[in-house]
Image (cartoon, rainbow, N blue to C red; front, side):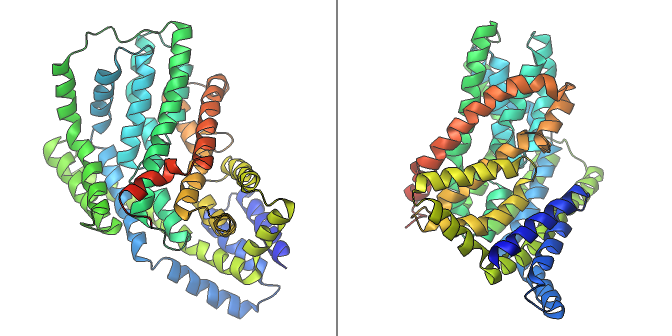
Length: 435
């Protein structure tokens, strides 16, 4: 029964997605169809409705709309140029400095906005023209921008980590936030190493400007108010001053004050559009999380996680091999499915399996988010990939040869994160958030 139900879910889901049905509707319909052979229609529909509402009634879930709103306010607040200027002042003497500036800018801006596509659009929009004027290969510049944009989905605050917390049974959001720092930074470092190697081969020099502590200090002062958002929100959550949900509200208030009164880049007329856009994005994500609760019920009722676990353990009991198989599956899934629905679908299946091997839910959370973020920058449906090439006004075909080099570095970092738990667990353990 379990594998029949799993096959029905995946088959119907694939058919509906190919037909253009929204992922939330497709997820709900496929789950209901899978359970109908064993549960009466009336009971199924009543239970499905109850699961949707219970899934959307989680207090922690409130954090997602507020973090989305804070990110949209910061996106419109002219923050990108200030972060790029800071990165350029720090990295100006390094060969291929504009590429490294782009990568570092994405890591900082992505962490503030919580969006890979926003980072690729904002930072890429600032950097592309500079790279053209400096004689860089614009396809290489686009590849560096695209490859490094998802780092902000790992570096907190991150909505993807909050989503994982909800679906994994209440894993500590604060611990997940801390666990994302080192893997996210390693992703950026991996991209920078590739950029450095290519820059030396191509003969790209530094900016040529003389290093100045005065200029660096000025750039830091201009960018510090924006960067302080991360310090205030994450510091408050880790220090127990407020919860992740309360921290998201603090982020909104801080970003409003910063953008409207400090930088003065947003007026009251613009706020309406920002609120509407944030409400639309939040509605999609929150409804998707609610609908995923139907699938969780169907999986538990039909015994899908246990069946998959037995099948994998029947194939091998080596945790190294099992983790590798899971990650290959996730890499494939990530190429055609967005991060959030993939987390909602595969966490309930894979988490019970890895826990039997003693893998901590926090460590696995970073593995699954890291893995699925790669799908953001790969064809055929990588949102960040398409945003990056559109911003740079180049074709995917000419960017892909450069991107492949970045993919290799990112996959190496993924393997390190998979097999070295300390990369994810060190900071949560250091701050006493893991027993």
